[in-house]
Image (cartoon, rainbow, N blue to C red; front, side):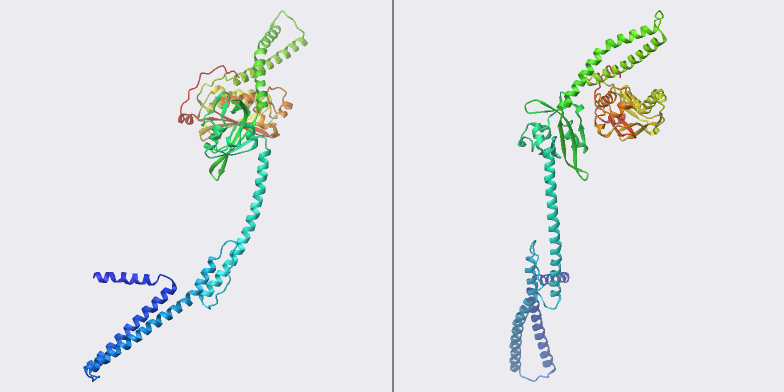
Length: 539
């Protein structure tokens, strides 16, 4: 039984052995086996034929003659077998060589095929499948030659275009006066333009291959930014653009321990959804910073030195208008009324100057608490009602009850931002138009928008709208009164509250100012921070 089980394995192994190797070897081997089997069969048949004749008595010979006859027959069969064996080897070798010769020739021609050498000539004419295969190879190489030639032309043209673009980009980068650094996903500087090296007062070897924290040590006012606060690493971590304007008061600490005032923007380099690095652009804003300091000094001096004389002026005007013993004519009374209104306006401007001064000096400390955002918005709308009626501007409130969540902020400071948005919307809207206060929830923030149909902000001036003492050109012509401190104060307050402030506008169509406050749930998930007590924060 074991023998029967192993028999198929023996035949299978023999068949695999006979089916491997070159065609020549297989042809010779098969011929030898065929001739051997033929000789064995012929000998067996002869033996059986003689045995049958002797048993029937058809052959009447003596034993000696029979033995001699059998010996003679055996020698004849051996000779015939040897001749057949030799002939089979010779013929099979010759047949195998003729059969494999075209294949060997094809292999040599195929091995010579390579880029730049696609020549393959149809040289086999055997009239069988081998010739057809050789012809197919020749056609294939002709097509490959055409494709490769076309690709070479395309690659050469594209390479030339890329070289031109590369030179253009290098020229542009070298001509830009702003510093530009290219960093990888780990924040290591890979490239730097000449302006960056000039601003940093460093050689290329001192910048390339170094960490951004080492190349750009940033001070925010007087505090050194750690890695978690550094704009480059924030951009790489969030995969979004990070900007630090001149109002942020960033300084790069140079090697000589001097500070370089800069405004800085970091944009991520994306490959699909994967960040591969970032581009850092920074500019020297020394002149702007000096002007900003001058504005701050002016606000401080004006707010302190004008407060006492203005209070005195208001007191005397009040005394004149309320004193019964002093009789004024109707014209004098109108003059006093105008003077009181002018003093009141001046007092409001002085109040704005003092608020801006306190914000600049860090004198306002928010007191955080959880506030119902819908209640906050409803109070703002109620307080602004009389203002909108006086300006003949309509208003509406848009929100869903599902968006009435708790936000973590200082309600008084948050109200100042929203009141400023509403006042500007009413002041710069045309009569009969509508202002919309829209509330929406966005993941971990609540966004409040104030949309108007007013004069808008010119595109070229939008970058300065949150700057200190700045008013757009069309705003100055539309409304003469204003100090350019309202939106600046809003931006400063938003930074203290951890809120995001922004706007979109189109001149002649209207503006949308928005502020986003973090929800109480989002803040509760984060590590708690200690907030100071509320300071003086009149606004």
